[in-house]
Image (cartoon, rainbow, N blue to C red; front, side, top):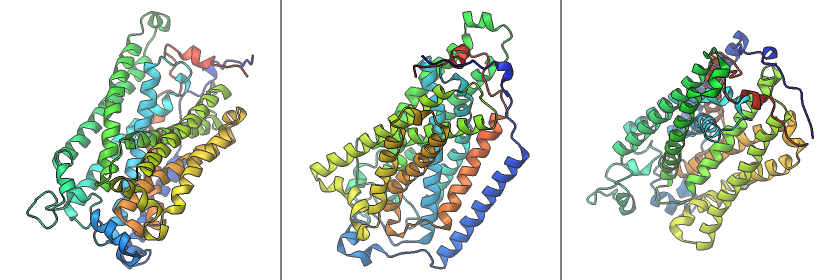
Length: 452
């Protein structure tokens, strides 16, 4: 049995320093992102970076566009699609930080206490993602049918007397209508953020405890956090599936899958785990979180390994069931990603499985790989890139077809949202001690070890 020396809390760097150097780098990155986005918009408006329209790729692509409301391509739609992609992707990572915190509270987990300040700060990004997503949706509605990503918002789409009438969409209009869509969005965001702030508040209240031994006999604050976490998990279970239907599946509004919510959850969850792992390792390399050992990293590695496999299982099952049944209204989703526009997305579709399944599976299979920081950083980075690609494949084929790409607009959007996310996390890490010294399970987390 392996053993390790427990680091004293007195030896820990308790206060994270958000340095002026890091601030300036993040602001510079944000500025570069904005410039690249503007430059990309100028190029697109001049006609650079566009490919072909569906009608130029044969009858099948033209038929798919007509059936799914893909009207004439406008370059600004590519900008909207990329902003929507990044807003939903980073919103998911922020939400998973709260989810990670909540399920560890409910499970009374001790191992993760030493790293809990990291996911605890992710929730502060929710107001930014909330503002971005609501503003983007309202902008699409205001700009009209040629700019929206959602065909079901088009004028007259549910009116039998209109030339735009669609019977399938009309049948879903009780759920897919603009007021109810916005109401769900606002309610879910408010619930997530209110519950997150309660959890964060309880965590900070524990820092003010003077008599730790007495608190251990009756950990009132901790118990409140557990109850709040249980409520959050119920809210999360419902809201995560609904927003997957709303924000992503309703892009291909004629298509549906009962497994899509699970696929979306798995993609978000493993992305959040990768972000937590990267942040913990980088902080440890800077001299923080000295109590984090190879055993904590091993558990984070096991989580990434397990949920990479889970994502693959859910995604492949969804594909296999639709392939086997071969029902036209179901196969249309995969047909667009494998066959249309001369197989425009085919390489990305299969590369998606490689980077999100085979790569983590083969690299993290060995025990020591899950304890090696260099390997964990490489795999976590690959997972983030891979699941960004997963969201790219969920959004782009159903919105702009073969007019997507990877240029200044795409890179600019990534830099903007990534720099805002890192700035939010870093600034809030500096507002509380890095180690929750009065958490009831802090000693257990410090002494955490396993068989070698």
